[in-house]
Length: 175
Image (tube, rainbow, N blue to C red; front, side, top):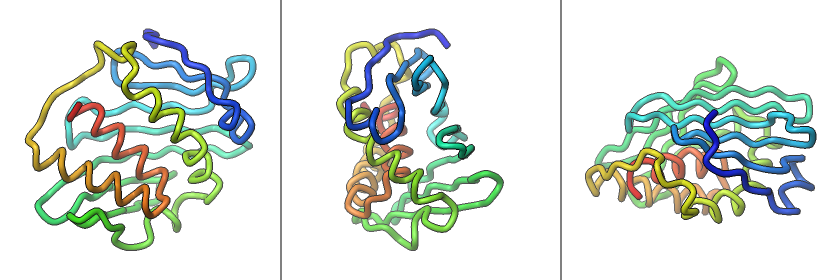
């Protein structure tokens, strides 16, 4: 991974997850590390707006691998995912509301809690100048508007894993 920047995790994130720092690279990917530089989390965002992205998590004896893609149409935003081999689909209406149960059936609640604790750190970093050079393409405003509405709906529903997926895609394609 070609490092752009190493950023320390907040004290709250360190206490809740054991993540000590994040490293971002020029290919729109990032990693989170713990003590002794143990890799805890890897996120790689697709370079195609509807392509497959990957998230790998190794923490507290749990290993989770999620491959996902995001589709935006006129009525909803859909995250199609495979969580450790189990298909999962999460949808948000055009108005941003969660449709269905979210990732509750396929993702351990502890994983959602990890993303809740990391959320503020990642949001603080999204405008960091060090991210220059990452893929930034502006796609049609309907697509970006749909993602933005879905992000708000995911936050309201406390679907933090969905917030991560949607925010990374928005940052990659719409900012």
